[in-house]
Every structure is written in C-alpha cells, then in structure tokens.
Image (cartoon, rainbow, N blue to C red; front, side):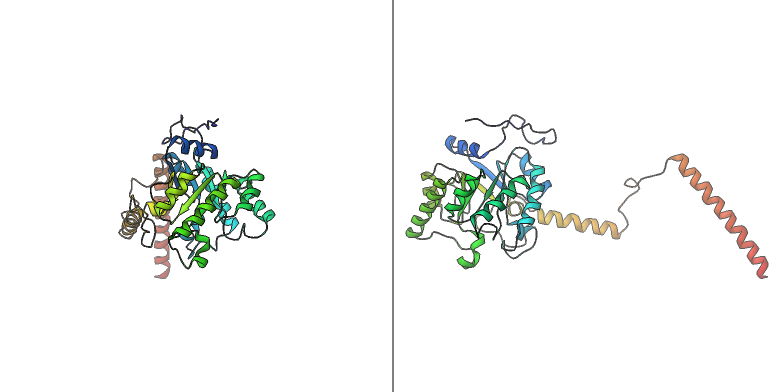
Length: 314
C-alpha cells in the first residue's frame, strides 16, 4: 500500500513533518496494524488547525454544528450550503488529517442521482475527502463509491433519526437488535464504505462488529473496543450549555475560562484600565511636537477672539 506524503507547512508546528497524510486506505492500514484512530469534529479554521496540529487522524465536519455552533435544537435544520461553508473553513485549516463532511438531513434521502450530486459538492466545493451518511443505505454507498466518493457509514444512534427513535436513546439493547445491526454493518462494508461510525450502542455489540469487519470502526458512546474514537470538539473542551452525555470526557472547561476572560475584559473597559498607554499607538516625536504647536496656536487665536468679543459686548 502506498501513502501520499503531504508536505506539512511551517505553520503547523504541532505536527511532525514526517507524518504522512491520512487517507481512507491509511485508516484501513491503521486497523490492520492495531493502531487506534483518533477523530474529532471541527467547524471552523481555528479549531481545525488546532485539532490537525495536535495529530488527530480524522476531522469530521459534523452536522452537530447545527446544535453547538448555530444553536438549533437538533441537526435536522442544517442545510447543504451551511455544511459547505463550514467544510471549506475546516479544509483551509487542515494539512494532515482526513477531512470528512456530514451530509445533512434531506441531502441524500430522495433520489440516488440527487444524493450523488450533493455528495460531489462536498468534494468539489468543500474540499472534503469523504462524506458521512447515516443508516444502512447500501444502494447509496454503492452509488457514491461508484462515483469515486469515499463514504463513512454511521449506525446505532443516528441523530438525523431522532424523531423516529423518540429521542437520543441507546440502540441495539436486545440480541435481535444486535443481530440486525451486525448485518447492516456487514452490508455497508460490502457496499464499499471505508469506515463505520458506531454511536450509542453497548460496548459488547460494538466489539462484535469491530471484530467482524475489515473496515475500521470509530466509536462514540460505543465503548473502548472500536478501532477509533470520536467526540464533538465542544464537548471535549466544555464549551456546551447542556449536561454532558455519559460517554463524554471533558478535558478542559473552556466555557468557564472564556466567560472569566470576557468578564475581566468588561470590567477593565468599565474602569478605563483597558487599553493602557502601553497598548496604545503614539505619534512620532516630531509629529507630536507639531501637533502641540498647532494646538497652542489655536488656543491663542481663540483667546484673542474671546477678548475681542468681550470688548464689543461691553
């Protein structure tokens, strides 16, 4: 197998220049070697750079941006144009990681030609290197891979099916449901999916699926037995406004840190301690002297005018 060496720019100080560009075949090789795959979401240039420079293997432009960035109640309102906007921003911040874009609700649920055309936009216009779709849509996976569009599947708790599931509930809780899930996973792999996200399922089910498949599995709320793990970036750093799910480990409380910084800024502005003299620009000495002379001259003229007015009025 051949991996493309991607020249890491000098700006990406956190990433080693010797690390190869992550591709879909590279993920399969990582599974064969037993090397865990790290994945995170990102929705803009700044976070994409940070995530990429930290060495994350896969960056997902998730439709979860609808909730954590755009403030929607769920992912359903997110549009293709919104996803493309954020995908382009992420692409500009990534050098090494594989960039995967979520196809939003409604963009692949009608005809196959429409779904393929929408998916192609993510590669042509957004710069994504793969798209992710939810559910056991084997015909769609075949159509996409036939059009040279790499696909990541997504089974278990599929957020775009929130109404059908009656909420965000753990899936595959019975032996029969696990059997169906395993069959769906095998079908997606046979259809050409290059990787599979498993969300919100018992770890035993995820481990069984991972053991059966040749393609890598990436878990979120699916236990430690998957080939890789993914979290929502905002959950990871505590930049959300709701209680964290059971599977989320918060590595920082950036919400509290940012709030404290903003409050301190507001107080400094109110007490006129920001900006300080050191944080202000100054005229060169000659310009300052000239300005002072001009102001002094204006003061004399104004004083003369005042005296003339006083004489006239008296």
